[in-house]
Image 1 (cartoon, helix red, strand yellow):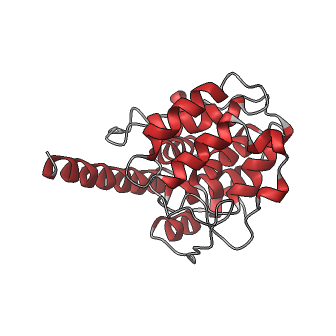
Image 2: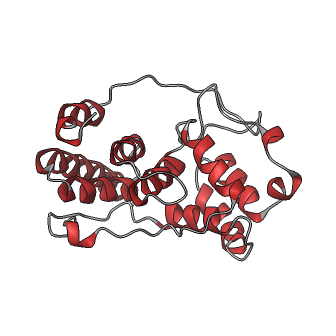
Length: 219
């Protein structure tokens, strides 16, 4: 699909076309914590070795999924320890970024300008980290979809592919991950898709306003 023909495709994704899935993996008893992981094709614990399954990152990931009310508070200490583990350092950093994302951040056209397109994902991923990102992306996990979109955007470890980068960033952005929305908006402006970028800007603002309203209501 040529970049010049992506406008309609992105608009369709913006307004939520696609199927929803709810089969969860890794922990049969885990509650639904915002559908971080779903889809029937998801990997299981048998796909990873004991070193990974006992890592601080995986402990943090489990804590995040097992606590619906405040999963990040429980998970952040694990992710902080995981940053010092070379085998899971980038995954831990990725989830720290997710947990620390400011859901009330307001974007403007100036903030989303092409000159400000930057990546927070380091390029020295371990094999198990890349495997996790690729596999969890297929499970509708917004954090990994965001990461895979950036990797396709950068063209490191995997071939550079703008179409796939936009696809995965869009899949993540549809789940209201603000970092993915910002990166998608920046990228759309960069390739001249201003109309679609402005639609995403409006959607992200609506989500932020909703969060602000809910926060004010519970004060």
